[in-house]
Length: 105
Image (cartoon, rainbow, N blue to C red; front, top):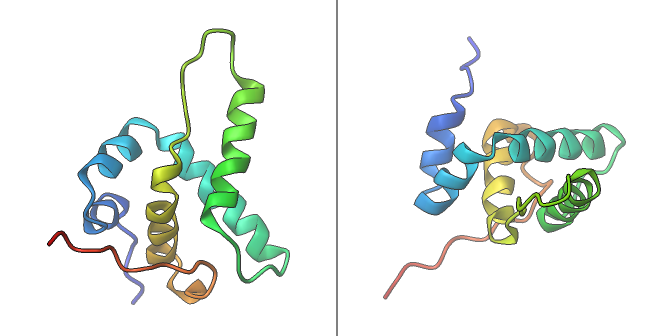
């Protein structure tokens, strides 16, 4: 039996409260991130950078923004989106290189 993906649980498992808050406040970023990563995968690209995907999202949000919009795509969260993607798509574990977070001393 296939286990359903629990996005909220996966986001919390990443262990970054600021990312969790950002993700919950901006669900469209994750939707676009996953869509772009899937498009790359479906085109046969089996390794890519999460920052590159975030840059594409940033470009499109700036081009499509209305005058005065203040929304920003946060680069600091690209590694967390990569981890979230790999949690949802474990069969694609080589798509992103993910490093372990450094623990505070």
